Length: 64
Image (cartoon, rainbow, N blue to C red; front, side):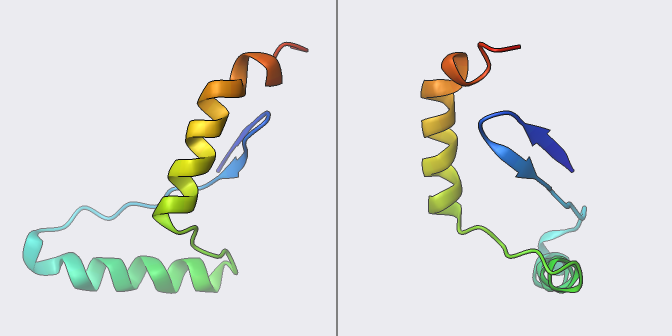
C-alpha cells in the first residue's frame, strides 16, 4: 500500500499467471480485495483520477 499526497492511498496486488490461468488468478485477486473490504476502482475512474493527478501534482506537492 502506498500513499501519494493529492492522490491518496493505492494498493496493487499481482499474480503471475499464464493465459490459461488468467481467469482463476483474477478471481483470486477479487476475493482477496473482498476479504480486505477494499472496493475495486473501475479502470476508467482510475485513469481519469490519474490524469487529473498528473496535471495537478506540482501544485499538490508544493508544500513539501
